[in-house]
Length: 175
Image (cartoon, rainbow, N blue to C red; front, side):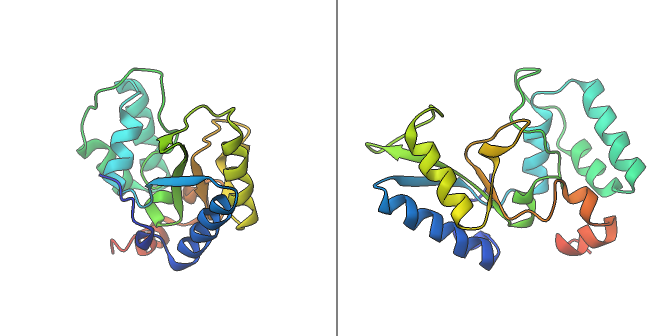
């Protein structure tokens, strides 16, 4: 299960998350941080739950072709998942999310103590502005697959394009 603990973020992201929380509180909006670190296995399960076997096999071949066979192995190891085919929870497979690297968190504004999932509510813009002001990337601004809860300290669009397989293993502490 994914972590909700800010201590599971790298220090720079933890500090910025605390700035986001403080700025939202100054605007009278509480936040629920519901995901910080997510393991490669958990990421694999989320990725698989909305995809067909053919789509999963294509992703496995993609990883293997890039030399990230260890990620393909994890995607295989978690096996089939329950979910609605086509209704994606995430576009990121294992190793493609900054959650896997302790550099991202997901949060939802709380209004009257309840999660506000309606993205047209003004609290989401307050949250998004706080994320940006803290020097993080807000996925609510993404052109494709807007993900309003997601904030990250990204180094680029996809970790697979930043690190070689050996560099990623070092970053993930699996060498």
